[in-house]
Length: 312
Image (cartoon, rainbow, N blue to C red):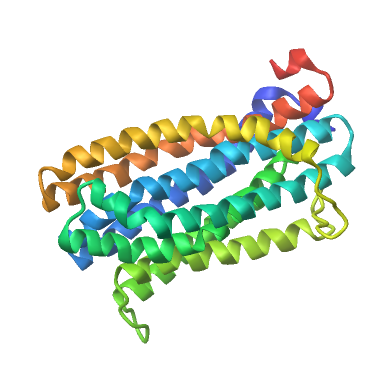
């Protein structure tokens, strides 16, 4: 496998650049959403600030933490020359993503309004937060599955396909969210629910595309759901990395939640301003995330092949 013999630094850079572009596009999408919400008023911006930590948590858990566990397991299997295990791991990753997405939806629909109220949401700001949340988190399965499928493909050493998909999803989210949120052309003006619908529709389309890719002959790792029985040993191989890695984003988002609560004490306008600031701060993530994601298949395959010195 070229990933076990190719020069490390050029390969790492080649892997990181497409991911950086895709993640930057994702971050810019959040800025575009903020622009749309700004047209809906200060209360809507404040409501977005209340919801954003939970949106970030979902992306960090599905794409970073559990996604890292998926890429790690798949790349180690491929490094050991066990393609059948890599294929089975992809199916197990899908079930983990599906279950986690369904759980996230249930938790946010049940407890989201209470969380936003505890954070300091009041009156119209709280109503706008709930309007966005109810639609956005109803589509959590799409977010989790798309990030899971992308992590499987990255684990095989393929960076262009998931990166191009995330770029397309970002463009689609901006267009659909703007059209439905602000009522462009023939579309109704749905406000916060329309902006959130842009994310749900875009991620659903991205999920469908990546699923089709993984079931095609173009993919190095093949997704064969019916032919793969569930095995705890394979679930554990993913979760022993992914579940432990979930601690980090939980700590990060807990900090953001505390800061959101503090800012909310200064009123709706301050909360709206804070929401804009946190969205811009999100632009810092792509560089670090891109390098980290690019490292996983290189290190994982080296570990799977027993090349510990190369992994280091």
